[in-house]
Image (cartoon, rainbow, N blue to C red; front, top):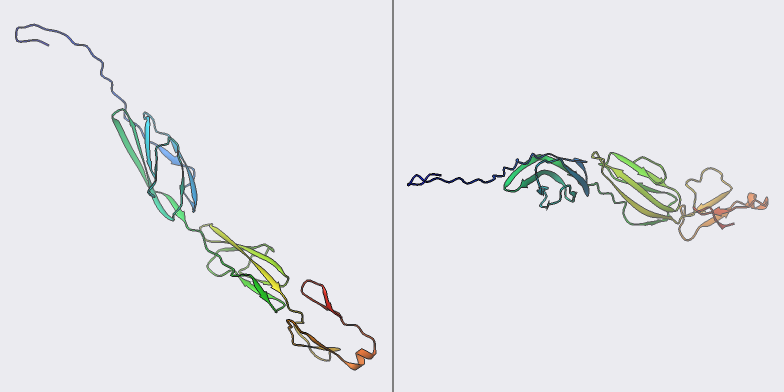
Length: 219
């Protein structure tokens, strides 16, 4: 520098210039059923501080965050990166898509005086898997027990439900022709009346009645 009196001086200093951050990031999964856990990988260079905006109202300052998306929708993810006074940002529009799982309800536990009971998982699903191995929308319960089904939708999301079935009836599905005995009512709940024809009674035949569990309830 030169003054008005032609005097001069020299000042030496160091100026630091930071390289601007180069932002890059990815996710291990881009779509799925809620709750959806996404592991983000940060490949940004020349940065020391980060701020993630996940698009669902949540954020993180972690370098490589793991985030749970709990609501259905499509989300744009933004990453801010800085070093010193240099800052950059980048975003991926509609990066994450989440789907709500289907809803299955088999209803309350059932006690019936019938010898069978039809269970219906309902329409609108792409797949069914019952705990008896069936893959149909409906099944026929013919023994006492707990019946469960897993339903799947077109997004590969699933839900499940179970119901307990109690078949209390003793009876036959059909009685025809000249049977050696008569039963009524059929099916029966608490009382079952059995008439044995005279000719069969005289011959010493024996009648045993079994319930749905295979136990003898009368003879």
